[in-house]
Amino acid sequence: MDKAAIERAKEHFGKLLENQMKRMERMKSQPDWIDYSKIKPVKIGILAGDGIGPIIAEDSKRVLESVLADEVKSGKVEIRDIEGLTIENRVKHNKAIPDDVLVEIKKYHVTLKGPTTTPRKGDPWPNIESCNVAVRKELDLFANVRPVRVPKQGINWIFFRENTEDMYALGSDGIEVDENIAIDFRLITAPGSDRICRLAFEHAKKNGRTRVTCVTKANVVKTTDGIFLENFYRIAKEYPGIEVDDWYIDIMTAKLVDEKRRRDFQVLVLPNLYGDILTDEAAEFQGGVGTAGSANIGKQYAMFEAIHGSAPRMVQEGRAQYADPASMIRAAAMMIGHIGYPVKSKNLEMALDVCGQYEKKVAITGRATGATGKAFTDYVMQTLRDPKLKEKWEACVRQ
Image (tube, rainbow, N blue to C red; front, side, top):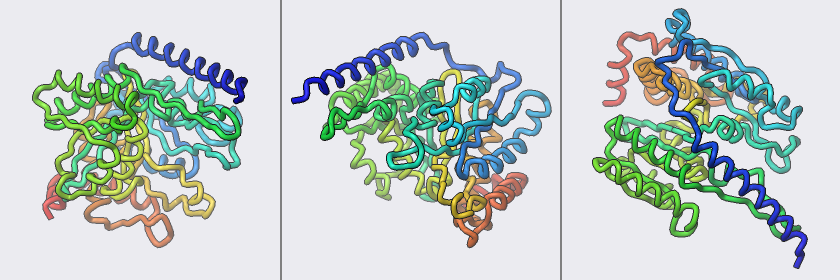
């Protein structure tokens, strides 16, 4: 037995525990939710990312500037680019987010982010932390919110994924004890579980949803998932008019494809890793991860992003112009609603539904056999200007 290796592991774990206890104290002293109606201007930062990011970010920015043109002109909203969140610059500084970029990000109330490359073992890049995970931790964006809507199939789900804990919180802090043993750590806290579950119930209450479902694997992962599930049912008691249930992650992946059962689900709340997996599966019903947007919400900041990766292969093969911007444009729609313009948000979502799910007059294949992202964006903007957009959307849903 290598006692020195055991002592090193103990010291490593002790430091992790100390950092998380400090995090709990910061969480307790946080200010309350920001009120965008009292801010002028609301500052929006565009983080293009890398890979296909700059291409789809440019398309998304065009849509954003068009939809919010009146607000920008009147000084209610300001839209600016934030440079430097590329894999090359992050590697240069050996940080998930270079210090100067983080300073810039914190100057904006909300950000719209393109995909960024996360190195994995065997890649030519050093093993720096995921940029997404780092931003979420730095800004305490504890709620990852992903809606999936396919009206024709009766699907109207919204997922509340805890964003700052679970395996991802300590994903770069595992330890190789010796050549035979490697250990990663999983973090679930009562305050972290409380606030994500409470946000899910508040959404249900405010939006007329009648059911909230918790997804865990608490029968096997008894301690951490047990805390999450326990807090879910404790908070549920404060919302007596809302039906609650819980499912295990393995069977839930099956039930989402069950045509009879899946219509029952409305609001789903779940820990980080399960949420990452399940929302990618759910996005397939809507047309794939390239069509789904994502919100990362905290009390003082919010970041909205495409949920897919940076697709370096598309760039290497000269196909970046054929990347689908729909996911990032959907994220922009979510952001528009978040800062106080729900009608404009809804109209953009309807235009995306018409263009991506129903009419499909301009189809993206990711190759020269289909349209470019720019052409698809032009199609969305043209549809958005249609004075009969709502009637067109309703007719598509009824077909």
